[in-house]
Length: 193
Image 1 (tube, rainbow, N blue to C red):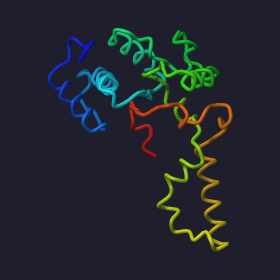
Image 2 (image 1 turned 45 degrees about the vertical axis):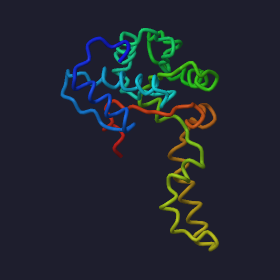
Image 3 (image 1 turned 30 degrees about the vertical axis):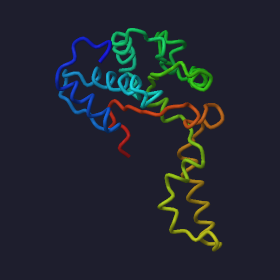
Image 4 (image 1 turned 180 degrees about the vertical axis):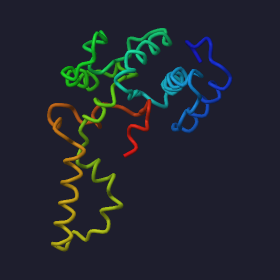
């Protein structure tokens, strides 16, 4: 893989597996190169034209390490954006910069790799239609032609939409408008509920 000089055989095998399936969990032991493998897999998917924009969702205490590893790995890091960093300064990640940084993603296709904290990711609102589509199977039990079912359906959806859009609706762009077609989670156990 271009730009990577020291990948091990097992890392290359994992990159090939992830590039074939477009999904997976990399569960190497500590120190065996999960971060490097994830970065290489994302870059490989971009290079072969399968994916256009990957977001790395990481714990806040590791965001500067991820940015450093990405910029050390890539020969050109002009397509990397850290959300909340005020133009990738990384002096501090600050939620007051989220709106401006997320809007950069809408305005420009330049950013192929985006790094953000899990807090920033969970603040992004979803469109109502996305939430409805996700709950489509569960909602099929409602016969909306009946008043009682229609009211239950509306109450269920209002509750889910409120939970998933939070207080940032209107301040931040919708997730669907960011052009993200690939997500990588570091410490994914944070999202198990």
